[in-house]
Length: 353
Image (cartoon, rainbow, N blue to C red; front, side, top):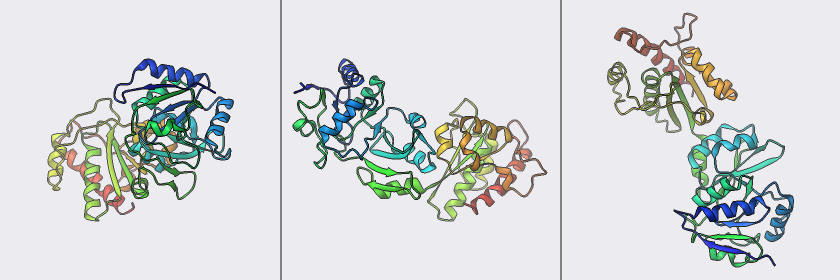
């Protein structure tokens, strides 16, 4: 019988030496019980076939049921999956790290389940291990998933190599599983996140406006579309704005604030933010002010091309020039003209979404 080393860790301040020991055991093909925010799991190196076979045997799990991969960074899904749909990015942005397992098309064919746990110990062990980690619940298949360490070790003492006791899990419920390889997506298991919460996030339309500094043009567009959606009682649309410049945290320009005040809109609390790949990938519609913005976005996320447009394409007046010029440092009249073009375009967009 294998001797199980059991150690107790403070969930808020885990001893790094024990974390490293757990990582070393996983790299070497061992099995380690670790806590997550949902239930306790048995961590194993996905690349070690003998270890995975041992895991199936211990859990008495059918070989046709694959184990989900646990990751420590959101960006790693790009290395593991292909044809990732927009709803996946929305769910990841909202619920990761957290109790959500998503099923995607695997790069090497078939399907892959992926989760990013919201537990410091689990994340550190995954990171230190440096190998792909699967982590099914620490129970015999068909038995209740363990919500505390005593339940986890009860039937596994001597069957695993290392076990971390961190008390009772935060949520005491299993993760919700969503299959995003089918259309429409399917909630296969309702866990800590309800089906209603999943649907509300995944089905909400996201419109992203992009300009250079996120202090005038994109702010105008966002404010106008939000007002239109409120007038239509549309709560199924989320409107974002961002800029391509490195600097963030800036207020809107005085001219922009004054113009929008005339529309009954207060943007005094706005602070600029720099666009991110996550922001772009979760958007259903991306509207930019200039061709240059379009090119920059395609550099960071080429696959969004089919939902990326110049905002002025929706305006009646274009004069064969689809750029909406930056009004920064220009006259108030120029600002007003810019606003007029944006308002007309946003009006048409509001009738299309």
